[in-house]
Length: 364
Image (cartoon, rainbow, N blue to C red):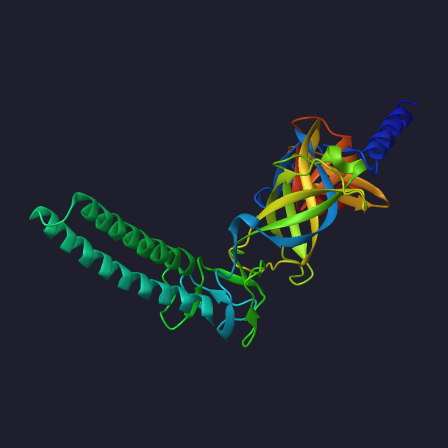
């Protein structure tokens, strides 16, 4: 009877050791993990972290309006040359187009006439001043000549100032003026062509230059997801043009009004584009993530073992005490697995070569 009891206890021990999916195995204090294996395996510790929410949305690449300049004509005329194309990179001061303008030519003619009038008025003023000082002419005549001179001088300055302001030093006396790039960037829009005519009542711009090394992404957020998004959230952006490449940005603005037709809220994501790979009007897939106030135990998703529709981890206590535990995963994100149940804070989880140990411990 005593021998039978010992045999039963031995069977019970073997049974507990061979329990498939939640077993702690200690065999006569002999290491389950050899010294050589101990040098190769890696660990992760289960710690509470704020749960990172994820929201997948779509959007469109756009240029940063703060880095865009629109170039308007300052005079009517005919376009003689257009030296750039849409999409071309230009540098500050580069000539974009040359225009011949009757208005510009007229301004220079007016300036020439004003200079002649100024010369006459100056001569009369000097003569009047000399006669007045010698007592030959009256003070009234002297003051009239001085006033006429000042008026002629003011007219010259006015015309010259108008030419400088409108032409920014890029006009010539033969009636041509040059359109130059006020900043470096890409020609986003071009609305003139050689031989075209710019009317005096034209209010449209000729060029749009933008620096796309910093771009915006406008994303569409449905009403049910508005509470999940906050300014400062991280956004990962991918495009059809660069499959597998992810660009990291940040939500820097949320509109306060839904679109009346689509019923979506627009959010703006600011994105560094130093490589200028991203172009305006590209379609974008966006994943916006933020940390919530809710916390959960978190481990690396490399620790997870999937078998028969269940999820397991290998918990390390020491080289002689290794345990397989079944866990329930809340969800995985950015290489992290948030655990709903099955683990305790501070437990060390094997993240490399855990499959080898799992197979050994479960006799698979």
